[in-house]
Length: 128
Length: 108
Image (cartoon, rainbow over all chains, first blue to last red; front, side):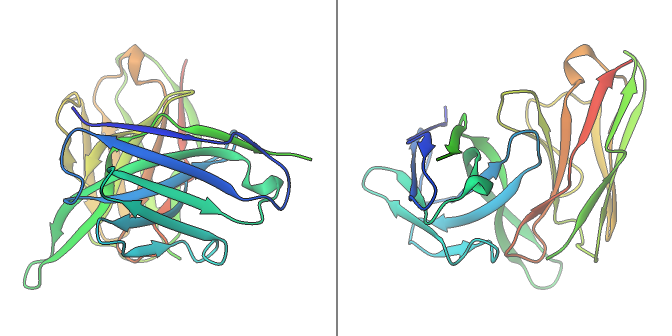
């Protein structure tokens, strides 16, 4: 059974760096993409970015200048760093697994952007 | 970025009702769409992938349809455990992947 467990500091001051790690238990690690998604209190979901087992990343352009997602395949873990946080970064942060889907009729393209397993979420509060 | 707009944003319904939630994309996205259910304090749960593929373990009263810009999530007969917030998500053109603003379904 696949489980995602996540951890990291829950209270930060403005300008500090948010750091979270997600560990994957059960199932393959290399056959999926791994994402971070956040949700401000009482609001909707915002995609932060993704990484595959080779370390290839894609980021939300709105956060790209401050975000780094990394992977440690030896531990089946991936991590999120977000620099220079402000109160606007206060949110529950989720890690999630993106599974493979193939789209297209004549040209087949793989996507790993539908999320079937999620971590429980970590509330990160930014406050002075 | 592709904007996803859900309607309604919230509404009330009764046990046994048939409910339809709509998601509209700001440009054509084929069937590159997923639906999630989220309950308070919990992570989202995947219901539907590729616009209409029901995920394993999801009750058959849930169904998804649509392609291009207009999509629907239908619950054929509401059960008490279905009262939650529902999100659509597109990944046709990313980054960024984008979600709808959510539809909160409450008990009447």
